[in-house]
Image (cartoon, rainbow, N blue to C red; front, side):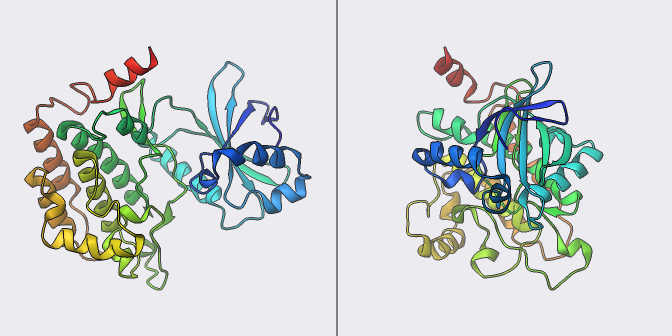
Length: 326
């Protein structure tokens, strides 16, 4: 779809972006070539060859409002765009958009399906971590960030989906509301367990470094396996790294199991981190997760570290990013 195209008489495509989890793997040096191909291929080739993983655009409304448009070929029944749109529709109906993005419109055009979401300005958590001199957050900020992400995950589960990914590049900070939210939900899948379908295997879709042990063991994803990676990310935010971060990919499963067995993963963390992992590792398939217990642990920890509420005092990165922008 050419830049400049107006969708539904409201949304003008102004920029092709490559921020999709799969498309984002293209190196920046290839970006001009990819833009040229997408904007100049005949439509039937574009639909059948270039959109297997979806294409993202920035768009603008009649009054200057900013939007994000995600698009894919109508014939791609396994489309990530299709599944994400379905989830965000469910989010909208549940009035839970504060943890994600606002679904504005969905439609079809020129053999393409697309949906539009409201743009929320602000950096990714990866940007925030990179802004920190030591590449990590205080315990107070780490626990409050995790609280927000856990709220989003709980909603994913309430709506009978699995998230299947933790990615600091698509977990973002809304500078206007000063909250954390998930900006990309392309990894969500309907939870077969909620549909009483036992023979469907759901795989982890995120980075190897955050994968739950069940993934390494060849098992299927369950709700508890969405929270285990979040605990790994909590440790990483707090300490700046994970014990298996710099080793060969094929050695990660063993290193992860060892660090959990001897508790070295939590060596420089508050005791509550170990307690949260101990709890989530005992949750059996089909059992309800006690989210309240996890929220309580996080709140107790951030208060002990000096924070008054979810957004006060300021997030670690706020002043640093303001300084960088000035």
